[in-house]
Image 1 (cartoon, rainbow over the protein chains, first blue to last red):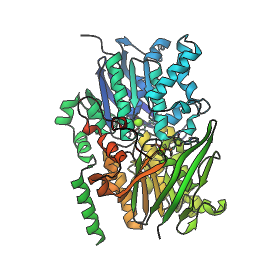
Image 2: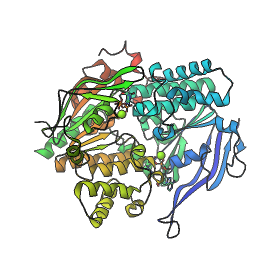
Image 3: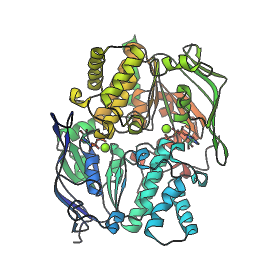
Length: 278
Length: 278
Ligand SMILES: Nc1ncnc2c1ncn2[C@@H]1O[C@H](COP(=O)(O)OP(=O)(O)OP(=O)(O)O)[C@@H](O)[C@H]1O
Ligand SMILES: Nc1ncnc2c1ncn2[C@@H]1O[C@H](COP(=O)(O)OP(=O)(O)OP(=O)(O)O)[C@@H](O)[C@H]1O
Ligand SMILES: [Mg+2]
Ligand SMILES: [Mg+2]
């Protein structure tokens, strides 16, 4: 069997917070013990309660923050961003789409430059080709050529989210960690993006870690599913297994709380409400 | 008389390549005790039209309307000093990108208490008690501790809930919620929706809910507006929207639910004849 693209052993992350620099202080155990493995060309979906440590784990997987303890392997190679540092090549291989796209875009950089910039740094492509590539990518995520010269604040929430995805894809990463990447998209644009991700996975054997609160998206895109609750990994398994037979009580609650969009449920709600008012 | 009454609202932006109309001739009204959902394509003008109501668009935007009235008062021509006391108190908004909407330099406790000070003139003790109560209502445990946290020390969903706490702090007459639950798992989403719908029932609040989440529409809305490229495509009561949508765009949108995927690919708007006619 080939080497997994991503593997972790017992990742822990604590945050120390205190009221002042000198007094008091409190430790938040954001990630308690995360062990996971993702094979090449596969998708691991992470779901979990708000505040359960998903984004914290994502920043560790993408070499942005160090874990407090535990081991991280990318393509079989042990990575320790504090002790040994990270090569430029490794940084390029692993990309992240942040939960908060606004904060991850430079407000003074035009979108065309945002997309072409990685090519300036990492390749010796001529400017005209860089432009072409950026334009193509813009089109793939459902934006138009006239958006090329706009600044980040001139976009809608969902448009910015797509810019963040496009930027991450420009570098041809082999591992892409996406933190709530389609939460601001309507169903049709969401479908376009999910189809694009699936195509890229087929073509280039891309590996995804996909954080999402939307269980229908998870069910559609994941090979494996991991469930987090209060910093703990409470459930892990193939998509089929987790959806068919959830073990942990949080997972069960999660499935039960998913809103219903069928006509019968709407009628029942409206009837309840009419009864309350009467 | 509707609480908010908008006739023929148009918003255009002055861009480097000419005028761009983001919102074109929208009519929209909402009554006290009513939940109006706005759904539609990413980039179709949903956030912009609500920011126009709030008077929070950048100077590059031109807003025109035959009527833009709240509670019988003309918002379009109201002097700024008068408007400052309505916006944030009688009309509050949960912004789409919560992390970007909070001030990174102040603790969340300070930011919530500042709203209470400015609009309600509460003293320190009252403010503190109310802030803690609000954080509890939005499901943030250890609220006392969390008051001292800065936005970057909170998760995406926690920031979103702080934003919600700030918006409901003054018990507004109209709450505009722009994608209020995108960063929340369905269990907390349910808690928040119950809270908002509860406020609407108790205080007769009107709620405008912008969302891509069809389940949220089904579980909360009385009436639904569907938007596409700055135009209103359809306006229906919630049951009609799901039972017999009139516009082809709505039909296409609903069929893009990942649950409706047939085979490997998700349907997108492009799969349905040509572009919807505007
Ligand atoms: N820089 C920080 N300092 C202190 N605490 C932090 C910091 N970053 C995150 N936390 C805390 O760690 C916990 C996990 O946060 P994280 O952002 O990983 O959650 P999450 O699972 O991504 O949640 P969400 O779904 O709401 O985005 C939270 O309780 C959060 O308040
Ligand atoms: N400052 C600006 N300058 C130019 N165009 C802008 C500006 N702000 C927004 N727009 C454009 O106006 C249109 C409407 O934006 P808006 O934010 O209202 O979309 P939305 O319906 O809320 O979309 P989403 O669901 O993605 O949040 C978009 O095409 C956007 O690019
Ligand atoms: Mg997060
Ligand atoms: Mg928006």
